[in-house]
Structures are given as C-alpha cells and as structure tokens.
Image (cartoon, rainbow, N blue to C red; front, top):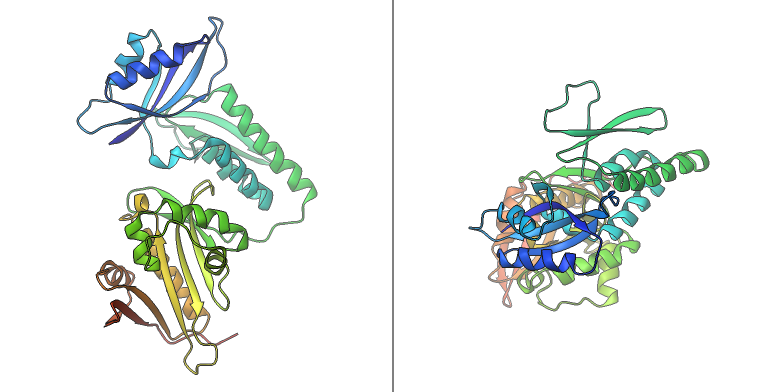
Length: 350
C-alpha cells in the first residue's frame, strides 16, 4: 500500500465530489481524507486535496486518469507520508498549544502545519522546490516543499505566527524546550518528552489503537481499555518518570516508556519499566530509542537495575533491550518472563 497526495480542481456544485470518489474507487484506490486547500477560481472551481491509498501493484498514475475521466484537472500528484492522516483540526490545535507554551517554536509549527520544511535562504533552492518567505519577529525564514502554497494555507500560517507574536509581547520568557526531535530509521520524525497528567487522553488513544498482541506484550492483557487509575500511573508514576513519543505536530502519541520506583527503601533501588509502541510505528527504531531514554532516566534517578514482566512467549523485548545496549537476563516464572536489566553505576541521589 502507498499513500498519495492529489490536488484536483472541482466545480463547486452538488455531486462533483461523489463523481470523483466513484472514479477513484473504480480504479481500485481509496480516498482517506478530503479538504479544501485553494480558493474559488473565476470558473467557480475550488482545489481539493485528497489523501488516497493506492494498493500494491496499482500504478499511482491511475489517479490522474480517474480525475480526467470526470473532468477534474489534477494539479498535484506526489507521494505522502502516513503521519499526515491525523485530523487537520486536531493538528492545528496541537500546534497552537505548542506555540502557546513556547512562542519560539512558531517556525517549526508553521512548517509542520503546511507539510513543509525550513530551508536556508542563502542556499541555492532546489529546482523542484516551491518556497515562501515568512517573518517571525526579527527572523526572516524560508519554507519549502514539493508543491505550491495556496493563499488559504498561508492565511492559516499567518494566524499561527500572529499568535506567536502576541505571546512574545505579553508572556514571560519560556523555559528551554524539553522536547527532543528524534529521526527514525525510515526518515520519519517524532518528538520525545516527559509525560504528565494532561497526557492521559493521548495515552488512552495510543493504547486503544494498538493491536491486541501489542497490548498483551505490554500489559499481559489484550483489553482495549485501561482503567483511569492505570492511565494516571502511566503518565505520572510515583517516584519515576514516563517518556512520551509524539508525532511531529504533537497531536498523537505513538509510543510510551514508563519507569516506576519499585522499592524506595531498598539499599540498591530498582525500577520497573514498560514500553508500548503503536503497531504502525514499530520496526523504525522508536522502541530502541525509548528503552535507551528510560535507562538513562533510571540512572539519573540513582537506579541500579530495571525489572519487567512480559508473556512467556514474548522474546522481542530481550532483542529490543540488547539493541539499546543493555544486557538483560530473563527467568521463566508462573507463565511469564521476569526481566532483570543491570544498569551502569547509578548516579548519586539528589
């Protein structure tokens, strides 16, 4: 399966979108989302953006031919990333929240909103790159992407920049950002940050999206729901910390590593840990990165060992721990594997 971004010009009259959807379906493809990205032309048509799933073995050019059959000119036809399937309103609100917390993040937020990237204004632009300048305070920046920017999109970006400017004038200087932008093996990116009580809805949705197999590997149960007490403990563990992995826009959680102090009175403090990664984000290096981060956190807290419990047939976790540079041992007990992971010399307790 492949995901493609398609822009088409459609007359603003009843039935036109249905005709296009029928043609795309007849070509064996499936429209996953539609939204308006362009302004009405003098002919009364608007530009709609489609995200279309094209099955393996089907030439993506059938989308251009399908649009032509219903007399809807195709103005853009480029591959898209699965991370762009998130709801655009949720994404915009998440980006506004990010800018409200840190007005300095506005350039990154605008680039994410427009599916673009920041490029060096002094460098010679790539011949197939469409660019647009933006100004953030005294900064003059340049956005770039593979297709043209529309006035509708730029007006949305301007609203986000205006929010940043207003906050910069009225808000105290923010604390340094604690988010870490992580590049995964396939080129996609996630944000890593510490979780907190306000992240309960994100973690609840992450757990629900995971497959029964992934839920069983983490919680010894395939149940699609966690009770409120479990959710609170995951995002705000007593004596420990949780690391959340988010999509670049911050709108969806795709992974979580949680660390819980096992026995605060023990002379050699240990911590229990768990890792959950959404199925579509597995095999990209995210699980390994989360394990490394949680091990580093445990060492910072003065822990000497990590422990965990997984189903007896769950061997992936030991491979994951070894890829993270750790040396786990496992003991079979009561139908589960009891994991023990020694850490480096623990840091001094604060």
